[in-house]
Length: 415
Image 1 (cartoon, rainbow, N blue to C red):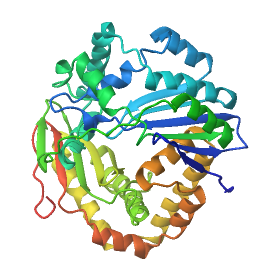
Image 2: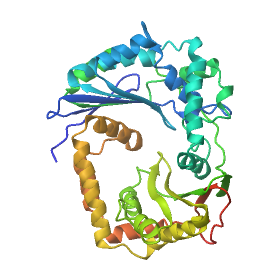
Image 3: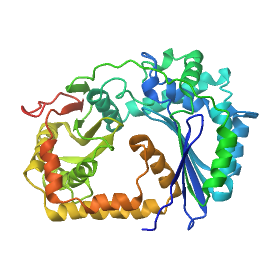
Image 4: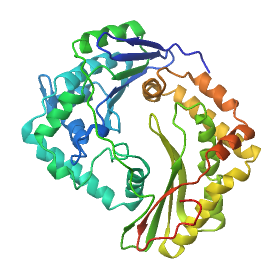
Protein backbone atom coordinates (compact mmCIF):
# COMPACT_ATOMS: atom_id res chain seq x y z
CA UNK A 1 0.00 0.00 0.00
CA UNK A 2 1.23 3.46 -0.83
CA UNK A 3 2.31 5.86 1.90
CA UNK A 4 -0.42 8.20 3.06
CA UNK A 5 0.04 11.91 3.68
CA UNK A 6 -2.79 12.83 6.04
CA UNK A 7 -2.75 16.38 7.42
CA UNK A 8 -4.81 17.69 10.32
CA UNK A 9 -5.61 21.28 11.21
CA UNK A 10 -7.86 22.67 13.95
CA UNK A 11 -9.13 26.18 13.29
CA UNK A 12 -9.53 28.82 15.95
CA UNK A 13 -13.23 28.09 16.31
CA UNK A 14 -12.56 24.39 17.05
CA UNK A 15 -13.44 22.87 13.65
CA UNK A 16 -10.99 20.08 12.78
CA UNK A 17 -10.02 19.58 9.14
CA UNK A 18 -8.41 16.34 7.92
CA UNK A 19 -7.08 16.11 4.37
CA UNK A 20 -5.77 13.03 2.59
CA UNK A 21 -4.46 13.84 -0.92
CA UNK A 22 -4.85 10.93 -3.36
CA UNK A 23 -2.86 11.68 -6.51
CA UNK A 24 -3.97 8.63 -8.49
CA UNK A 25 -7.71 9.46 -8.59
CA UNK A 26 -9.80 12.07 -10.39
CA UNK A 27 -12.44 12.55 -7.70
CA UNK A 28 -12.64 14.00 -4.21
CA UNK A 29 -15.04 13.53 -1.32
CA UNK A 30 -15.86 15.06 2.01
CA UNK A 31 -17.50 13.95 5.25
CA UNK A 32 -18.65 16.63 7.69
CA UNK A 33 -19.63 15.39 11.15
CA UNK A 34 -21.51 17.94 13.28
CA UNK A 35 -22.08 17.03 16.97
CA UNK A 36 -25.87 17.28 16.79
CA UNK A 37 -27.10 13.68 16.73
CA UNK A 38 -30.07 11.94 18.31
CA UNK A 39 -28.57 11.70 21.80
CA UNK A 40 -29.39 15.42 22.06
CA UNK A 41 -33.07 14.89 21.25
CA UNK A 42 -35.22 16.14 24.14
CA UNK A 43 -37.03 13.42 26.13
CA UNK A 44 -40.33 12.69 24.42
CA UNK A 45 -39.05 14.30 21.19
CA UNK A 46 -36.92 11.49 19.75
CA UNK A 47 -36.59 12.31 16.05
CA UNK A 48 -35.82 16.02 16.44
CA UNK A 49 -32.31 15.62 15.00
CA UNK A 50 -33.71 13.55 12.13
CA UNK A 51 -36.22 16.26 11.20
CA UNK A 52 -33.54 18.93 11.46
CA UNK A 53 -31.29 16.94 9.11
CA UNK A 54 -33.99 17.00 6.45
CA UNK A 55 -34.89 20.63 7.11
CA UNK A 56 -31.32 21.76 6.50
CA UNK A 57 -31.53 20.67 2.86
CA UNK A 58 -34.79 22.60 2.26
CA UNK A 59 -32.98 25.77 1.26
CA UNK A 60 -29.92 27.66 2.48
CA UNK A 61 -28.44 31.09 1.92
CA UNK A 62 -30.01 32.71 -1.15
CA UNK A 63 -31.19 29.35 -2.55
CA UNK A 64 -34.59 27.82 -1.91
CA UNK A 65 -34.99 24.05 -1.76
CA UNK A 66 -35.15 23.54 -5.52
CA UNK A 67 -32.23 25.87 -6.23
CA UNK A 68 -30.11 24.19 -3.56
CA UNK A 69 -30.71 20.74 -5.02
CA UNK A 70 -30.03 22.04 -8.54
CA UNK A 71 -26.75 23.67 -7.49
CA UNK A 72 -25.49 20.41 -5.97
CA UNK A 73 -26.75 18.33 -8.91
CA UNK A 74 -25.01 20.67 -11.35
CA UNK A 75 -21.74 19.76 -9.65
CA UNK A 76 -22.42 16.07 -10.18
CA UNK A 77 -22.28 15.65 -6.41
CA UNK A 78 -23.23 12.25 -5.01
CA UNK A 79 -24.45 13.28 -1.59
CA UNK A 80 -26.05 11.97 1.54
CA UNK A 81 -27.12 13.42 4.85
CA UNK A 82 -27.83 11.23 7.84
CA UNK A 83 -28.26 11.15 11.59
CA UNK A 84 -26.37 9.01 14.08
CA UNK A 85 -26.30 8.98 17.83
CA UNK A 86 -23.61 11.63 18.20
CA UNK A 87 -23.61 13.45 14.83
CA UNK A 88 -25.52 14.75 11.88
CA UNK A 89 -23.26 13.89 8.95
CA UNK A 90 -23.10 15.37 5.45
CA UNK A 91 -21.14 13.51 2.76
CA UNK A 92 -20.46 14.28 -0.86
CA UNK A 93 -18.29 13.06 -3.73
CA UNK A 94 -17.64 14.59 -7.14
CA UNK A 95 -14.91 15.34 -9.62
CA UNK A 96 -12.06 16.93 -7.72
CA UNK A 97 -12.46 20.30 -9.47
CA UNK A 98 -15.96 20.64 -7.99
CA UNK A 99 -15.39 19.67 -4.37
CA UNK A 100 -14.40 23.12 -3.09
CA UNK A 101 -17.50 24.66 -4.69
CA UNK A 102 -19.57 21.97 -2.97
CA UNK A 103 -18.02 22.89 0.38
CA UNK A 104 -18.95 26.52 -0.21
CA UNK A 105 -22.58 25.51 -0.72
CA UNK A 106 -22.52 23.41 2.44
CA UNK A 107 -21.26 26.46 4.26
CA UNK A 108 -24.72 27.94 3.61
CA UNK A 109 -26.41 24.69 4.66
CA UNK A 110 -24.61 24.63 7.99
CA UNK A 111 -24.45 28.35 8.80
CA UNK A 112 -27.44 29.84 6.97
CA UNK A 113 -30.23 27.24 6.63
CA UNK A 114 -33.69 28.56 5.75
CA UNK A 115 -35.75 25.87 7.53
CA UNK A 116 -39.06 27.13 6.09
CA UNK A 117 -41.93 26.77 8.54
CA UNK A 118 -44.40 25.83 5.81
CA UNK A 119 -42.47 22.61 5.11
CA UNK A 120 -42.50 21.11 8.61
CA UNK A 121 -45.47 18.86 7.87
CA UNK A 122 -43.93 17.65 4.61
CA UNK A 123 -40.72 16.77 6.44
CA UNK A 124 -42.69 15.08 9.21
CA UNK A 125 -44.76 13.12 6.68
CA UNK A 126 -41.61 11.79 5.02
CA UNK A 127 -40.20 10.72 8.39
CA UNK A 128 -43.49 9.09 9.30
CA UNK A 129 -43.54 7.05 6.09
CA UNK A 130 -39.97 5.89 6.65
CA UNK A 131 -40.69 4.83 10.23
CA UNK A 132 -43.85 2.98 9.19
CA UNK A 133 -41.84 1.12 6.56
CA UNK A 134 -39.54 -0.10 9.33
CA UNK A 135 -42.54 -1.14 11.42
CA UNK A 136 -43.70 -3.26 8.47
CA UNK A 137 -40.28 -4.92 8.18
CA UNK A 138 -39.49 -6.82 11.41
CA UNK A 139 -36.00 -7.66 10.16
CA UNK A 140 -35.12 -3.97 10.33
CA UNK A 141 -37.20 -3.23 13.39
CA UNK A 142 -35.57 -5.84 15.57
CA UNK A 143 -32.08 -4.33 15.37
CA UNK A 144 -33.46 -0.86 16.21
CA UNK A 145 -35.34 -2.28 19.18
CA UNK A 146 -32.41 -4.45 20.25
CA UNK A 147 -30.19 -1.35 20.48
CA UNK A 148 -32.77 0.31 22.73
CA UNK A 149 -32.49 -2.64 25.09
CA UNK A 150 -28.73 -3.21 25.11
CA UNK A 151 -27.54 0.44 25.31
CA UNK A 152 -28.40 2.93 28.02
CA UNK A 153 -30.51 5.98 27.26
CA UNK A 154 -30.00 8.04 25.09
CA UNK A 155 -27.39 6.00 23.19
CA UNK A 156 -29.92 3.33 22.32
CA UNK A 157 -32.50 5.75 20.92
CA UNK A 158 -33.32 5.21 17.23
CA UNK A 159 -31.48 7.93 15.30
CA UNK A 160 -34.46 8.44 12.99
CA UNK A 161 -36.95 8.77 15.84
CA UNK A 162 -40.11 6.93 16.79
CA UNK A 163 -43.71 7.04 15.68
CA UNK A 164 -44.80 7.81 19.25
CA UNK A 165 -42.62 10.93 19.56
CA UNK A 166 -42.79 12.24 16.00
CA UNK A 167 -46.19 14.06 16.26
CA UNK A 168 -45.03 16.05 19.31
CA UNK A 169 -42.00 17.65 17.63
CA UNK A 170 -42.56 21.33 16.83
CA UNK A 171 -40.81 23.85 14.62
CA UNK A 172 -39.46 25.41 17.81
CA UNK A 173 -37.95 22.06 18.87
CA UNK A 174 -36.15 21.76 15.54
CA UNK A 175 -34.91 25.35 15.63
CA UNK A 176 -33.73 24.96 19.23
CA UNK A 177 -31.84 21.78 18.33
CA UNK A 178 -30.03 23.66 15.58
CA UNK A 179 -29.19 26.61 17.81
CA UNK A 180 -28.01 24.45 20.72
CA UNK A 181 -26.10 21.78 18.84
CA UNK A 182 -24.67 23.19 15.62
CA UNK A 183 -21.20 24.35 16.59
CA UNK A 184 -17.72 24.12 15.08
CA UNK A 185 -15.98 22.96 18.25
CA UNK A 186 -16.34 19.22 18.07
CA UNK A 187 -17.18 19.22 14.35
CA UNK A 188 -14.91 17.19 12.05
CA UNK A 189 -14.43 17.62 8.29
CA UNK A 190 -12.61 14.88 6.39
CA UNK A 191 -11.60 15.45 2.75
CA UNK A 192 -9.88 12.91 0.51
CA UNK A 193 -9.04 12.81 -3.18
CA UNK A 194 -7.19 14.78 -5.82
CA UNK A 195 -6.79 17.89 -3.66
CA UNK A 196 -4.02 19.68 -1.82
CA UNK A 197 -4.07 20.49 1.85
CA UNK A 198 -3.45 24.20 1.31
CA UNK A 199 -6.34 24.72 -1.14
CA UNK A 200 -8.83 22.89 1.07
CA UNK A 201 -7.66 24.63 4.25
CA UNK A 202 -8.02 28.05 2.60
CA UNK A 203 -11.55 27.28 1.36
CA UNK A 204 -12.65 25.91 4.72
CA UNK A 205 -11.20 28.91 6.55
CA UNK A 206 -13.12 31.26 4.27
CA UNK A 207 -16.38 29.30 4.33
CA UNK A 208 -16.55 28.17 7.95
CA UNK A 209 -14.31 30.70 9.67
CA UNK A 210 -17.28 32.80 10.87
CA UNK A 211 -18.92 29.79 12.56
CA UNK A 212 -19.03 30.72 16.25
CA UNK A 213 -18.08 28.16 18.92
CA UNK A 214 -20.33 27.54 21.90
CA UNK A 215 -20.71 25.16 24.81
CA UNK A 216 -22.16 21.80 23.87
CA UNK A 217 -25.64 20.83 25.07
CA UNK A 218 -26.22 18.41 27.90
CA UNK A 219 -28.56 15.44 27.85
CA UNK A 220 -30.26 13.20 30.35
CA UNK A 221 -29.09 9.63 30.80
CA UNK A 222 -31.22 6.71 31.84
CA UNK A 223 -31.32 2.93 32.09
CA UNK A 224 -31.35 0.48 29.22
CA UNK A 225 -34.34 -1.66 28.40
CA UNK A 226 -35.05 -5.21 29.59
CA UNK A 227 -32.47 -7.92 28.88
CA UNK A 228 -35.11 -10.40 27.71
CA UNK A 229 -38.13 -9.10 25.82
CA UNK A 230 -40.67 -10.04 23.18
CA UNK A 231 -42.72 -8.00 20.73
CA UNK A 232 -45.83 -9.85 19.61
CA UNK A 233 -46.35 -9.96 15.85
CA UNK A 234 -48.91 -12.12 14.10
CA UNK A 235 -46.74 -13.97 11.60
CA UNK A 236 -45.46 -17.39 10.65
CA UNK A 237 -41.94 -16.06 11.15
CA UNK A 238 -39.92 -15.22 14.25
CA UNK A 239 -37.09 -12.71 14.29
CA UNK A 240 -34.40 -13.14 16.93
CA UNK A 241 -31.99 -10.46 18.13
CA UNK A 242 -29.09 -11.15 20.49
CA UNK A 243 -26.61 -8.63 21.89
CA UNK A 244 -23.65 -8.86 24.24
CA UNK A 245 -20.81 -6.60 25.32
CA UNK A 246 -17.71 -5.97 23.23
CA UNK A 247 -14.98 -3.30 23.19
CA UNK A 248 -15.18 0.01 21.28
CA UNK A 249 -13.04 1.04 18.33
CA UNK A 250 -10.63 2.94 20.56
CA UNK A 251 -9.83 -0.14 22.66
CA UNK A 252 -6.47 -1.89 22.01
CA UNK A 253 -8.35 -5.19 21.69
CA UNK A 254 -10.72 -3.93 19.02
CA UNK A 255 -9.17 -5.91 16.16
CA UNK A 256 -9.26 -9.11 18.20
CA UNK A 257 -12.97 -8.49 18.83
CA UNK A 258 -13.46 -7.79 15.12
CA UNK A 259 -11.75 -11.09 14.23
CA UNK A 260 -13.90 -13.02 16.71
CA UNK A 261 -17.05 -11.66 15.09
CA UNK A 262 -15.55 -12.42 11.68
CA UNK A 263 -15.15 -16.09 12.61
CA UNK A 264 -18.81 -16.13 13.62
CA UNK A 265 -20.19 -14.20 10.67
CA UNK A 266 -17.67 -13.43 7.95
CA UNK A 267 -19.11 -14.90 4.79
CA UNK A 268 -20.69 -18.22 3.86
CA UNK A 269 -17.89 -20.22 5.49
CA UNK A 270 -18.48 -18.62 8.89
CA UNK A 271 -19.77 -20.57 11.86
CA UNK A 272 -23.23 -19.08 12.16
CA UNK A 273 -23.94 -19.54 8.46
CA UNK A 274 -22.60 -23.09 8.21
CA UNK A 275 -23.98 -24.41 11.52
CA UNK A 276 -27.30 -22.62 11.97
CA UNK A 277 -28.37 -22.20 8.36
CA UNK A 278 -26.57 -24.73 6.15
CA UNK A 279 -26.07 -27.82 8.31
CA UNK A 280 -29.23 -27.62 10.41
CA UNK A 281 -31.43 -25.61 8.03
CA UNK A 282 -32.91 -23.68 10.93
CA UNK A 283 -33.17 -20.22 9.41
CA UNK A 284 -33.10 -18.26 6.18
CA UNK A 285 -30.80 -15.54 7.51
CA UNK A 286 -28.27 -15.33 10.34
CA UNK A 287 -25.41 -12.94 11.04
CA UNK A 288 -23.45 -11.08 13.71
CA UNK A 289 -21.92 -7.62 13.49
CA UNK A 290 -19.75 -5.46 15.71
CA UNK A 291 -21.39 -2.15 16.65
CA UNK A 292 -19.15 0.49 18.23
CA UNK A 293 -20.06 3.77 19.88
CA UNK A 294 -17.27 6.00 21.15
CA UNK A 295 -17.16 4.53 24.64
CA UNK A 296 -19.17 1.31 24.40
CA UNK A 297 -19.72 -1.52 21.94
CA UNK A 298 -21.94 -4.53 21.41
CA UNK A 299 -22.02 -7.58 19.19
CA UNK A 300 -25.46 -7.59 17.54
CA UNK A 301 -26.77 -10.89 16.16
CA UNK A 302 -29.83 -11.64 14.05
CA UNK A 303 -31.60 -14.82 12.99
CA UNK A 304 -34.80 -15.07 10.97
CA UNK A 305 -36.69 -18.33 11.08
CA UNK A 306 -40.11 -19.95 11.20
CA UNK A 307 -42.13 -19.79 14.40
CA UNK A 308 -41.94 -23.60 14.71
CA UNK A 309 -38.13 -23.66 14.66
CA UNK A 310 -37.53 -20.42 16.55
CA UNK A 311 -36.73 -21.96 19.95
CA UNK A 312 -34.18 -24.34 18.46
CA UNK A 313 -32.68 -21.52 16.36
CA UNK A 314 -32.20 -19.39 19.47
CA UNK A 315 -30.57 -22.23 21.40
CA UNK A 316 -28.23 -23.27 18.59
CA UNK A 317 -27.21 -19.65 17.87
CA UNK A 318 -26.42 -19.01 21.53
CA UNK A 319 -24.48 -22.26 21.67
CA UNK A 320 -22.33 -21.17 18.71
CA UNK A 321 -21.60 -17.83 20.38
CA UNK A 322 -20.48 -19.58 23.56
CA UNK A 323 -18.59 -22.33 21.69
CA UNK A 324 -16.20 -19.75 20.27
CA UNK A 325 -14.34 -19.91 23.60
CA UNK A 326 -13.43 -23.55 22.96
CA UNK A 327 -11.11 -22.79 20.06
CA UNK A 328 -10.55 -21.16 16.68
CA UNK A 329 -8.93 -22.79 13.66
CA UNK A 330 -6.04 -21.12 11.88
CA UNK A 331 -7.86 -21.23 8.55
CA UNK A 332 -10.87 -19.44 10.10
CA UNK A 333 -8.65 -16.55 11.17
CA UNK A 334 -6.80 -16.55 7.86
CA UNK A 335 -10.10 -16.09 6.00
CA UNK A 336 -10.92 -13.12 8.23
CA UNK A 337 -7.55 -11.55 7.46
CA UNK A 338 -7.96 -12.08 3.73
CA UNK A 339 -11.37 -10.40 3.72
CA UNK A 340 -10.02 -7.48 5.73
CA UNK A 341 -7.09 -6.93 3.38
CA UNK A 342 -9.38 -7.00 0.35
CA UNK A 343 -11.53 -4.38 2.05
CA UNK A 344 -8.47 -2.22 2.72
CA UNK A 345 -7.45 -2.33 -0.93
CA UNK A 346 -10.93 -1.24 -2.03
CA UNK A 347 -10.99 1.46 0.62
CA UNK A 348 -7.68 2.79 -0.66
CA UNK A 349 -9.29 3.34 -4.06
CA UNK A 350 -12.43 5.10 -2.76
CA UNK A 351 -12.35 8.80 -1.90
CA UNK A 352 -15.75 8.53 -0.19
CA UNK A 353 -14.53 5.72 2.01
CA UNK A 354 -11.33 7.53 2.93
CA UNK A 355 -12.98 10.87 3.76
CA UNK A 356 -15.44 9.10 6.06
CA UNK A 357 -12.74 6.95 7.63
CA UNK A 358 -10.41 9.81 8.52
CA UNK A 359 -13.28 11.76 10.12
CA UNK A 360 -14.48 8.69 12.01
CA UNK A 361 -10.97 7.91 13.25
CA UNK A 362 -10.52 11.43 14.57
CA UNK A 363 -13.78 11.21 16.49
CA UNK A 364 -13.01 7.83 18.04
CA UNK A 365 -9.23 8.06 18.44
CA UNK A 366 -8.22 11.72 18.25
CA UNK A 367 -5.91 10.75 15.36
CA UNK A 368 -6.09 9.00 11.98
CA UNK A 369 -4.93 5.43 11.47
CA UNK A 370 -3.19 4.83 8.15
CA UNK A 371 -4.14 1.83 6.04
CA UNK A 372 -0.66 0.42 6.63
CA UNK A 373 -1.18 0.65 10.40
CA UNK A 374 -4.51 -1.17 10.11
CA UNK A 375 -2.90 -3.84 7.94
CA UNK A 376 -0.17 -4.35 10.54
CA UNK A 377 -2.75 -4.78 13.29
CA UNK A 378 -4.56 -7.37 11.19
CA UNK A 379 -1.30 -9.21 10.40
CA UNK A 380 -0.45 -9.29 14.12
CA UNK A 381 -3.61 -11.20 15.01
CA UNK A 382 -3.08 -14.81 16.04
CA UNK A 383 -5.37 -17.59 17.19
CA UNK A 384 -3.99 -17.11 20.69
CA UNK A 385 -4.64 -13.36 20.86
CA UNK A 386 -8.17 -13.73 19.51
CA UNK A 387 -8.96 -16.56 21.93
CA UNK A 388 -7.55 -14.56 24.84
CA UNK A 389 -9.97 -11.80 23.91
CA UNK A 390 -12.96 -14.16 23.52
CA UNK A 391 -12.34 -15.76 26.89
CA UNK A 392 -12.00 -12.36 28.56
CA UNK A 393 -15.23 -11.13 26.87
CA UNK A 394 -17.47 -14.20 26.58
CA UNK A 395 -20.98 -14.17 25.18
CA UNK A 396 -22.62 -14.05 28.59
CA UNK A 397 -25.17 -11.65 30.04
CA UNK A 398 -26.81 -11.42 26.65
CA UNK A 399 -29.78 -9.28 25.68
CA UNK A 400 -32.40 -11.27 23.76
CA UNK A 401 -35.31 -9.75 21.85
CA UNK A 402 -37.78 -11.64 19.69
CA UNK A 403 -40.50 -10.49 17.32
CA UNK A 404 -43.09 -13.09 16.40
CA UNK A 405 -46.22 -14.93 17.51
CA UNK A 406 -44.84 -16.11 20.86
CA UNK A 407 -41.98 -15.47 23.28
CA UNK A 408 -39.04 -17.89 23.54
CA UNK A 409 -37.24 -19.37 26.53
CA UNK A 410 -33.70 -18.10 27.03
CA UNK A 411 -31.40 -20.83 28.39
CA UNK A 412 -30.05 -20.29 31.90
CA UNK A 413 -26.48 -19.05 32.15
CA UNK A 414 -26.52 -16.64 29.20
CA UNK A 415 -29.01 -13.97 30.26
